[in-house]
Image (cartoon, rainbow, N blue to C red; front, side, top):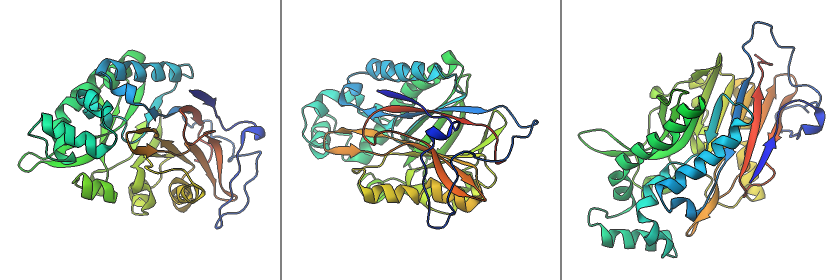
Length: 329
């Protein structure tokens, strides 16, 4: 695992990126002098998690892995630690680790699980049946770590059971505060074909989403595909930082790299938002693959958008340490 200290400071650290609609960005500056009344810098640790089959061997194995990452993050004394989309989804698979390990594909794994448990007839049933189990595991892992280390943690997303009369499966983000309490939840609105057709998921609501405040900064969050839709600009109007947590289920080709530019970099440019943080899942499980490069982009109204921090790899586990210092507010 690589730990990258990527803070918008010396020009040598800048990775410049030009957009067709933005003027060339200078390397030496990233905004006007900070107002003395502005809050202290918001420090964020972005975990580009690499999921491994061994993480699913037991809940203790998963907890130990997450705590190792949290402890590495705490070297930077962050106010917020961010894990990518689907991080907590994998907890639903822990009870079936032996069956998954013996399978060559997700379909084969599901078939083996269905043979063992007659209540499970498809992916939707698998995640609905285990939704409560995952919630408890998240409390014992992420909430406990947030409380122990006095840090806010976005625990990625999990597939939650929503609604009482008619159960719906949603892709839900959970953020814990430094006391280990749930500070915020948000459901994915614009689902992928995989989530709609194969998982039978239901969409969340834009009206229920809102920015959260941390250290005097307003932070807006979107979940992967949601970030491509300008409708979120109204929800996150005036935020200081836009966070996109992603599980990009394909190889990070040059075409995918171009697609990433149409997500956070495009949204912060359109919305006049200073910072945009992308946090990606990597790794593989059975025949599933996730790749993507985590990054911090900065938007200057006069000079366009550029990356001020970016992961070295789209496939390895890395941690980006970034500081949002109020410039451009």
